[in-house]
Every structure is written in C-alpha cells, then in structure tokens.
Image 1: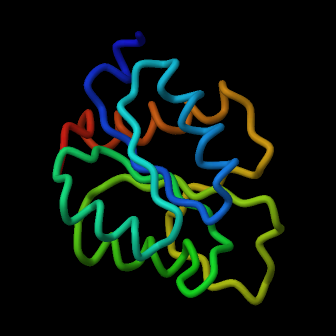
Image 2: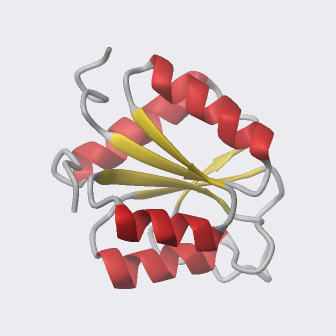
Length: 130
C-alpha cells in the first residue's frame, strides 16, 4: 500500500461498468478504498452519504449529466473535493470545459491514473475528507 493512497476513499463514476470495475481494481491494488457509481446522480448520492470520499474520478461522456456538469455541481456543493475526469472521446471546441479540469484520456495507464490521483490529493492538502 502506498502512503499516498493509505486511508483515502475514491469514488469512481462512469456509465460503463467495465471501466468502473477495472479502474476500481487498479486503485484497490494501490490501497485506496473505492466506491462505485454508474451515473452522475448515483455519484452525487454517494457523495452526500459518504463524507470520507477524498476524490472523485468521473467519466465525461455520461447520459443525462456529463462529467463537466458533475464537476461544476461538485465544486458548488462539496467545495474543494478533488476531481479527475476521464474520457475515451475527444474534448471538442463545443465542450465548455471548467477551468482547471484535470482530464485523463482512456485508455490510461496505472501510472497515469495513480499519478493524477496522488497529485490531486497532495494539492488538496492530503484530501482526508471534505
């Protein structure tokens, strides 16, 4: 278990179950506690119910509410909770990308994912809850 991941709870939100499960396995192998959501609505419900969540990893392209809008809601409701966005589709000029959004492109490596999470948690003051 890495000292960066010890005791940190990460929420993964993606409408593709395989992506959630694969990402969860990668993070659990690094010592993170992982919660899984299969929609933005489910992610918000878990955020309400689990104040120990230290970081959100969310897909951008989801039905109903996309990851950019979810990021905006999270920033409004949960303040400084770090968020890493993931996508398998290109971000286009039509997208309104929130300032400072961290985006990883699928497929991402284990090192890219854990590096992005470690950096976000460090910049959030170790991310121990909200």
